[in-house]
Image 1 (cartoon, helix red, strand yellow):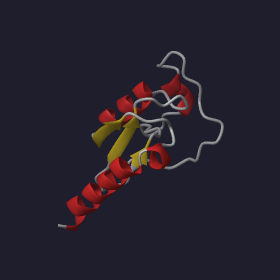
Image 2 (tube, one colour):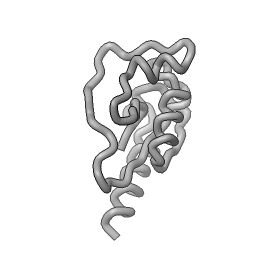
Image 3 (cartoon, helix red, strand yellow):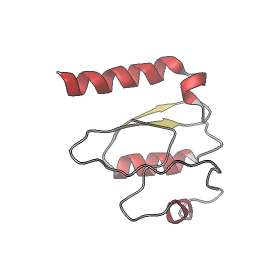
Length: 99
């Protein structure tokens, strides 16, 4: 589950991905997480009003990775600003792998 984050291809750097999108600068506090995980389905939530991560970068990475993607009109801290859509997405993801 990615919430307003980056989804890189294997071997791709954040700088390479960010360089494809004008007016995008990498966030200062990034946590490295390998992606994709073998055989794990994935979901991504695009925060369409994000000013920290360019929503086009989020959208591109999620679609390229084949994620189930939803968009929410929210700032970068979507889990605080819009907790219901985030919780709904998490519930849908859990249902899809537990049924």
